[in-house]
Length: 348
Image (cartoon, rainbow, N blue to C red; front, side, top):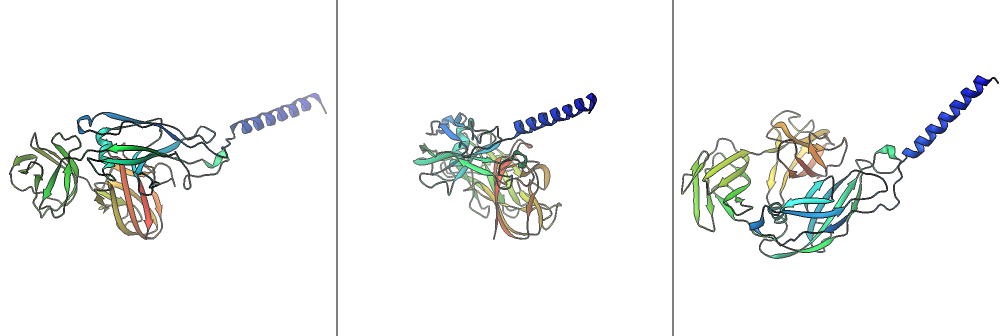
């Protein structure tokens, strides 16, 4: 064997050893018992309307699977000892070291499960959902992610009841509420174009009506052109009214109108803060969008990913033919382009 051949073979051997080492170094090994996230501290949970704009911080530590991982975290609450069987989601996002929320927002969320103006014993936990890519060598995929829960932390929580305006003659019992008690009332309501309505403050026994964007005490009943869901903002100090159409719908190849309009409109459950629909779908795909347009839309963060993590311009959701009950929780709805949420899709 000549000298050039020996050098060539030595070079090949060296490169093979180098590549082997690189492969070994890039291999990710998952702990046999990953370390679950924790809640380090809870804020003061005696909530007061006067401090509605203050920011509360829930501090935690991330899940540790043995390597640098990206997880989706959920801050959840339930009645003491209920083991989170009937929980409410306070936060959903990519970190749990410092979960921030205003007093008024937390109060509004917890009122879905707990009574205002009294002390409730509430369990809190952080739930981490971890999806590991197939190339890591560890089990777990986006459609069957790992879930790790922190130990529950209990606290006494005092919520404040919200001032409200009742909608009179709207066809159903509904209301808008003031999170800060400052005369500004907001909420989702279902309006019928054939039913003119007024607002009544049951505490002050005052009725408001009006025309267009202007309110007045004892004013005329309010009319509108199109029926459907609206987000109302009523200011009883400035005597103004804003009625924005807010119609969440299903769209996609699995729905009757495909990817065209109109979408299958969902209804709103004010008690749970969820949008829901029971409908029959075909084999295909679905997404959620607002007012039959694409400016605001939700789908899974990754293709085939969990529907517990929905983001703006996310992927389509695959479904098979059948009758479904679908519930959507919108965690962030504005500004447009930053919307997030989660949903459950149950086959009946």
